[in-house]
Length: 465
Image (tube, rainbow, N blue to C red):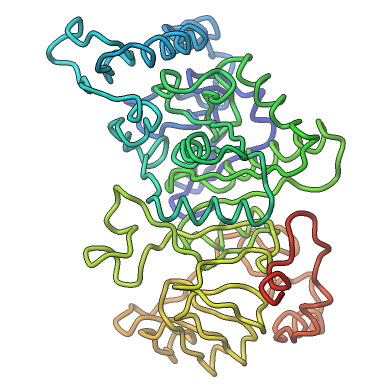
């Protein structure tokens, strides 16, 4: 059982009881005495004020479907996407300032009809309506719909990567700023936005926006799911990429289940075997959790910056070593070129890394994760943060002022998938197998493991020509 005593079951989510946010998630909770109890709860909201759904597994027969169907209907009440799109076009043509009532979720040319206590955005221009993520008040539930929007420089770098890899169709899952940039500035690119923020109905048409919950792969309207599946088949799936920026409080097991289902639909609808290229934006310290659920993903060094979060900026008031947010992808890192101002190409790793990331000859890799230059520990035989020292008591590197204790490993083994030990300690492996795991990879080993290219171009060759 992981930290906090709560685990999740992501199998067969679509058949779980439903709340207004779609199918619920089955959680396992360890209570006093070590007993495990199962319960259903909202996939998107951990705060009961946001969604009050809670049902013990052994009381599943008490689920009142009629009551919750009414709750779901009330939750979606007032959303007519086609009519809202017509309203948007009429307002764009009106030669007057525009208004948006955040309380009523309504775009209009007459703000006076709204109650004085409502949060009304006044005097909006056409440009404002084309960039709603810049004017809408952010939603701040870090486990559901936290809205930290990319800086323009980060958006430009991401779009540049897409263009270098010759992508034409972009699936934006929780990334409205990427969608807006493509819509307004990239005539040769197409995008569709999947987001849980229903306010976007007012600003994007039915073919551009789908009201969507990424924590259970749920479309709030059947029509939106049809639109998305049609988009997945654009150009028979060629030149398509998915980019997602989930709330950082979300569980990787749940999110990976969603992205795997999208990937399965992509391959099935297009009758192809290649995976959908993906970029997952998350903090660098979540790398073990992401790689555990998506073993084919690799973390890149590029630091994603946000406009409305001081810690996620490379500024005097930001974090000392830059933003901790990174790009994770199922593409070969050698394909992805990063800006030469702050990044360099490592010939030995065959990938772009940050300038402070020094290649370690013992680890055969550029080892920095957090924006510092790591140092190699010859006892642990790995690189660690420069502020860490090797502790003889703990037999590991740690902060100087740490409390000595044995850390229990609570994640899954990559070999047998059982929890409680790492692959290097797996009882199903022989001594020879374990020695091979600990043996550093040589450059020849890495070349043998290299997979055939599926998308894009070899950027290294491009740079040399």
